[in-house]
Image 1 (tube, rainbow, N blue to C red):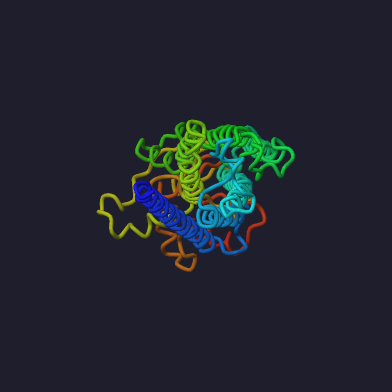
Image 2 (cartoon, rainbow, N blue to C red):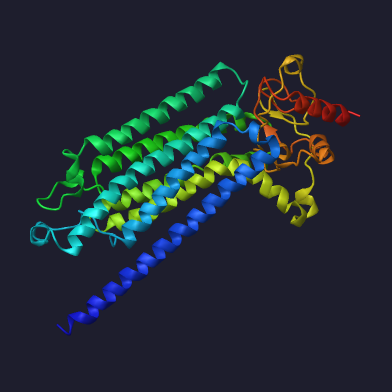
Length: 403
């Protein structure tokens, strides 16, 4: 008894330390993700006003609500349930566990939290992907029917995979209460932490949708005549979803490789996956703002405006040339795109009361990169129905920039 006591104490101490480390990481990542979303909203409101916010700006906050719920559930599964659920038990352990014991109650609670956690995870990822699709809709506004079709397919794919994941959670374990059953063994499909239907469905749907979303804007970007360095920087910004794939792969691999202990490691990687998903959804919006804030600290050769670069039809850089006849006839839009290139998107972050700064941005081509129909244009793409005062302001800026 005395020989085993030190070992038990060390194991308990290690478990407690692991729980503290997990909770610290969980809430630190949550705070950073929430701050990034607030910064995104600040940048958008500063650029277009509250009335100018679009669907992607709202859906990202829907995602934050689910991110908050997931973080709270992750905290409770470690704090209230000690990281336990109805998985990782032998048949003997299940049979001998007293239903009135504290461990039994914690395992039941942990199992219920696991089911709720998977549900909020699916809703979180779906809302962030819908936000990204609405952003891409603004990004590729006016490019033609083929690109609109890609966006529509993306919406169909995301919604279909969302339904598929929910079905895998709520239909593969019957009766549903078996998700928190201890004895007799309910089977792996009813052990939510390691359920194969849930793991495989969420993994397959996330991989397919993430790859599809990445592949919508990237091919057009690389068909442009931007400098290679800008293509690479823009690809990193728009293709940051690849890091979500890495986290999803690692999370699923741990569960599949080690059904007994892998769920705990998978929980850590699931937390990182949610954080990376939030950050990559906000990155195209906050990158230009951060770049502008850092501009005074950068060497002059890095902060200086780049030279004019020729852009092909369909890839427009604001300030890169005069609009064609069709572009001039097109109504203005309040949906000017955020920056894709390594340079900042001043249209996103500029204080609209400082027109001199906005004029400087228009006079420096390549500062804002926009994928839009027609030839290069000095005026950002604006959707019909925009405010007349805003249209006049851009018209005046355009006139001044040509002097």
